[in-house]
Image (cartoon, rainbow, N blue to C red; front, top):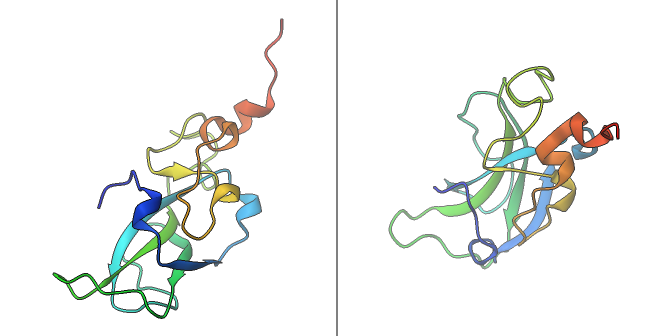
Length: 127
């Protein structure tokens, strides 16, 4: 599914569950996955690691075509800033990355100076 999520796709969310403390992460990647259950830790099949997910309300409906539920997964890949601070995302972030402090049920989360520029956001240019 598209990495550019809309709040209208997240109306059945009731809870965000973090498997890692999001305060230590500049950004997380988010994706809307099709899964068989409304609640609980979903199966994870990407590289990297699952750092969080959403739970849905008991009355959330299945997709009529697939019979599955759409739930967000929050994850990081091996080359992301938290694991490779001097790598590709030393400055900048992937398109689907948002600041985890802005995530809540039913809200996509936002890009912030912290998520987009990392440690560079903390440095004031000389001038």
